[in-house]
Length: 302
Image (cartoon, rainbow, N blue to C red; front, top):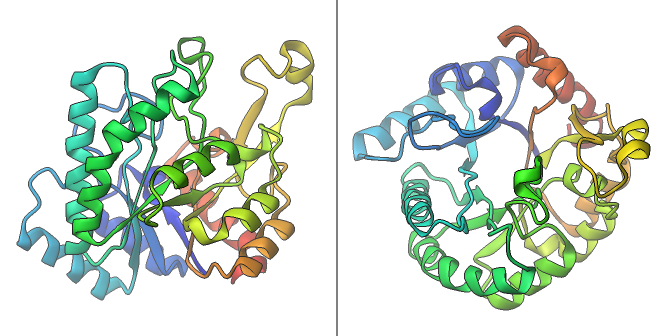
C-alpha cells in the first residue's frame, strides 16, 4: 500500500508546492482535487489543484514534469459534488465537469476518479436508484472510454437540518452498495473506502472490507470520534454527535481495518484526509496534521 494524502487540506498551495511537500515528507502519492475554479459551497470543497476546465496537452505535460521532478504520483483525481442534486440544471453542470475530470485522468496517467454518487435527499433510496441509472449511465460510459474507474466515497453528507433526512449521498451502506454493483456490474464503479463514515452508522468497517474488497479502488484514512455526551442529548436521530479526527484520535479500529485490507488483497493508495478542526488554525497546523497522521499509519502500511 502507498501512503498519501488528499490535497484539499493544502488548498492555499499550488500543485507544485503540494508535490514538493509530499516529497519532503516521504509521501509517494497525492489525491489531487479538481473542483471547477470558483467559490466553495462547503468546507473542504472548491479546491482546484488541477484545473480540468480547459485541459490541454501542455497542461498534462506540465503535470507529468512535476511528478517526475518530485517523484510523487497521483493516486486519483478528486471531485465531490452532488451529481443527483434535485435541480436538473445543477445536475447537468456537475455531470459535465465530472466528465472533464474523467477525460483528464488518462492524460496525467491516472486510473481512478473519486467522487460521490449523490442524492436527492428529499426522496427515498428506491426513488434515488432510478435517478442513479439515468444520471450515471452516461458518466460511466465516459469512464469506460477513458479507461478509468470511479471510486465512490460513502459519506452520507448529512450535516444540517436542510439535508435531513437522507443527506446528499445515497451510497452510504452495504445494502445500497450491493444495489449499485448490481445496477452497474461491469466493474467500472468501485468504492473509495473511508472507515470514518461507517463508525457513526455503527457499521463494522472491517467486515465491509472483507465483503467488498474486490470493489475497493482507493482508500481514505480518516478517523471519527463519537461524542457520547452529545449523543445522549440528541440521540442517534440528531446531529453533531460525531466529529472527524486524525487517524488514531477517534474510534476506528485501525488494526482490524488494515488486517481486512491486506486479507482482501488491496495494495493501492491509502490517502490521509484531514478534516479535523483542531488542526485548521494555520498552514503549519495542517502540515503537522499530515505528518502526525503519517507517523501513526506507518505502523500499518509503512
